[in-house]
Length: 632
Image (cartoon, rainbow, N blue to C red; front, top):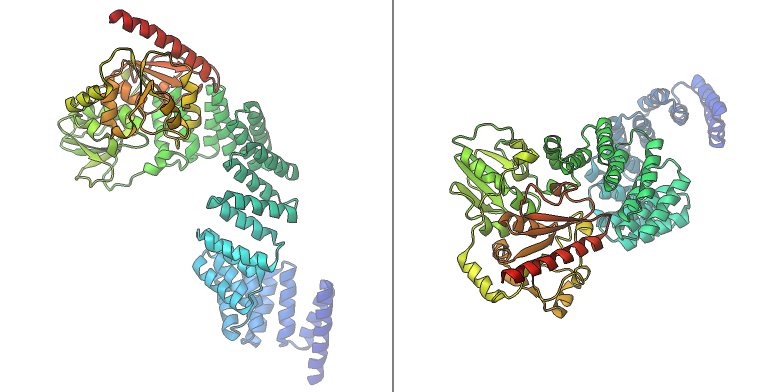
């Protein structure tokens, strides 16, 4: 019996030598002979189990490792390798139990702790995984993979500074650990340390010139820094390495769109769709490009394709709604406009509210009910859609209208049973609720049924007198100006002007008044040199001041911003300067607007062409000067 055991041990050693040389078939024969001579030789059973695992025969591996553990239940190595096989079989809870047993037997067993950590990570028990990696590192502080995986866990739970520290430790151990540099770059990019992120991606590429994701992220970071040509170059490098890299084509196309090289953008989106006809994001972005060419039917078709592929694609529904509204298809437009609440890319998503009270949107009776209507999106939206409130008030017991704080005084005279509340103040009790921009859907608004502008804004005689005194006696045509809107608006680069662009188109001998209280960099200094434009800035305490100032203007000239809505609501002659593709509410191919009968629209004839717009404005101001003089 002893001799058989010795022969069995010799066979195991021979098997191990063959195993290490990669002669797996011969090694298997040696292990099997050893087991036939000594069926309870747990080492032979263990090594044969490992061999089967290496060749992908995991069920057999489990059988042999189980037998080894039955014979020797106190061997940490057996439990660790058993856990490895269970992990391959996706039996993660059982794998974890096996690693737990291994480290219980041998608390200093770094490899078992490491694999235990990986299992916890796969189970998404990330806090426990981090603790487990800490234990690995306490045993072996130079194990780069433990620091790296710990960094991944911290990154997933958004502890980005700590994740960066973990990746730093990896790099201190192995300066050429490309994945650590890459993940470090992602963290830095997310916390907007963009120059440092670029340095990381550059280092990755020097270590591994074919690391395709590094070129892609490098491009994304450069795009954020508005270094568009360099971003394109990096996307192109990614595509050269991986010709079917659809995401690189997509982002490259979007950069071309951003810098108005639209033909190039179209070619990228067409290429994506050829590579992957089921890539919903490609159809969405292709639709956005087609809109810029005013090919609206094709744009709508692409949004619909995106939705057919991905029915819950909120951004596609949202852009479909905007395109329908812009082209006057209000029926479909309002329906899809409700997707704004699911579209995380839209600013409206940030205004999403969660109330216990039910949503009122389908025309249910409001008799004896108090309804909360709450403002959303921008100041201009609140001004435009407040016209629905008197109708809601007629149908309900009471309306609570929650608005931006600087609009509260403006709406004080909205109606007897309409209570105005500033956003952020405590709300009174109410029965049902509706976001303001859902009211057109509730009332099934069409172009010909847009509610008229009610007389909701009445003059504050005290304020009006104050502004008359400030402005002084009128001796010439008085023109209010608003040339730029909120800089964080997604389309601000298309809709806003600089004062320097406007100045040369303003005829002399006119009383110009700036209706903005905020100025861009450079505009304030320029205004100080152009005293023909009065600027009151801090004296405009809220929109009721702006309203009184608008009332004293002969004409208000504004880009698409809240001032245009305010002046339009007041019924003042309002000249709105619009980009080639305007916001949906201004519609297309007309110089009037059904929302604001007193508005006159000046549209770009091609993308970015403010010159032709401003020349028309200059000419029309001149004509109004003549009319003013005749009337005087």
